[in-house]
Length: 481
Image 1 (cartoon, one colour):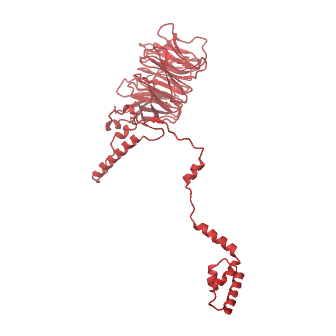
Image 2 (cartoon, rainbow, N blue to C red):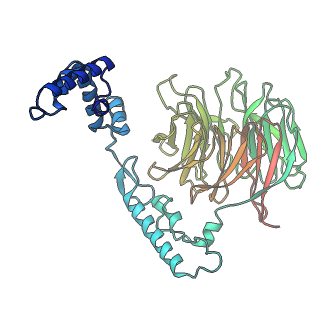
Image 3 (cartoon, rainbow, N blue to C red):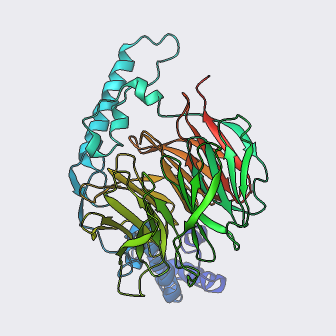
């Protein structure tokens, strides 16, 4: 009996337990066994430690009953209550199919098309015999989903997809072309003009594979030159120095050498009065930006060289620094990029602002019109190249891939490719049609300040780069010729 009671009540103290056992034994001997069961007579002994026993029993009951658990996600939601961002209910246009969708959400139409393509590919692979290596995926409809809806009508073949990548080889490198950084490049059908922090302009001959130095123009700018540009026919050039002066240069077609043809700034010019430069197609007009946001257009065809237009981007003296400028080849538009990220398009016929473009919130270091004057490329510290349509002033696409500031851009002669250079020393070639990078070269880890396509005089394309490494690098397309 004692063993059974000890197993039922393990928490009872030894003295109390022994006392109750003796008491039960005494009474069972006196009274008849028919009165009460022996086990019930242990109640007085149990009642001695009842509070402690009930506490342990209640604790075991609580442990046995399952509790309602709260998931980690729900706890996290409660913690973030009142602190998380509001749900976005705005609508936007899908860049793949053009349908209306919720912002920051995947397009359901594109997802449905992709699932259908995947099902078709799975069924085709299931029907083919399993012997040998399975054929690679050649369906090009997946590529169409990543293109802008303006080009959904274009038929893309597998052969075109293979052509999306290009290769360029280093043709030649002119080491130490300048004693300081090369800030700007300008090209002609037969030469490359380079300008840097020194006072000398250099001219390299591009008709010879070694690209020799053909001419050095000494004391062109005492404080150095930051911008140089040429007309498309290669007969007129203009350069701007850190002292604020702008000088014009003319080509002697017989000797192939350049000589000064005058200045457009007077003796009272101040530093920063003229920054970026751009010449028109025939070299008759010159556009320049100022430190207060103005854009000036000069007529340099005559001997007087007068200012014929002055565009304002803000109230007098409060505009943002004009960091880049370009003139369209058809002469209709003037574009300027500014330090506050603004891009302005002016109509040269009416003398009024045509578009104020958005999309870049950081300084715009380069603006460039396409050869057909239908697109504008703008790039800068944001690390992307924004493309705009000139017919309606719409933002039609972005070229992303640079990891640093983009300092310069240039269109190819056909308008099919766009060239860009950045502060990380990388030069990229972009396909404007597919909005993808088709080639990347890294010759140096220093900044590239200027990249230019060379006029296409042979079967292969070529471009030139210059920057903080003080060298000129020439690249040609790997065509096997």
